[in-house]
Length: 265
Image (cartoon, rainbow, N blue to C red; front, side, top):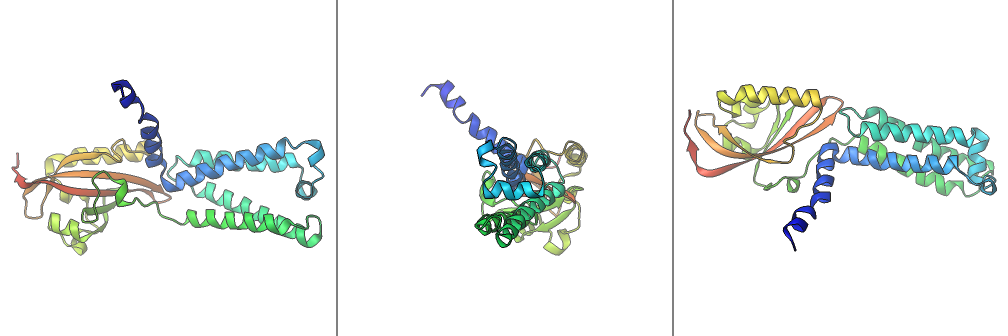
């Protein structure tokens, strides 16, 4: 294989991985729902004349014109595709869940009215789909350790909010930095870094809050850690961020590099 092929082959995979890191699992779910909604909208907008008398279409048309249904699906799909990149996606999830549930109920009711005798089948499918989307809407965006380069089950894991305040702290992190879990939670991430790096850290957090994304997400970053006793040591940090209605949350995986401490400047 030529060098050009070796370099070019993984590009689509890297691009997809970068997009998935950017939008997370919630965003990927919204992308799926958004594209599906657009497909449903197209199917409703361009129904062949001979199929409009089918029970499913006739039942929908008895409530509202098919073009109105198509518009509702199109707007919902567009909302999902837009909010998959945004910090807050509550409106998109609520709209998608409501539309799917309403569709399911309409299909179920059509069974009892006799308009669509097999409507219960579609109703069950739509209601299950709506329940699945509602369940995803309640999930916090979490990142598996295996998704981090060099991530291991014994690595130090730190979760912080958008302001850089530690929210959770595993025992490995306590061992590495010298702060117990109770002592670390609620403190700023700056306790983990030498003073000379704290200004750059604050500026980085401000950039993420402004831009809504981090260019460092998923990368293995060489840094200097600060132990509670004041000693410095080399670390490798892999950080990822996800978005919720409360703002940005960061998950960092920290590994010590080498065995010795780093001398202060």
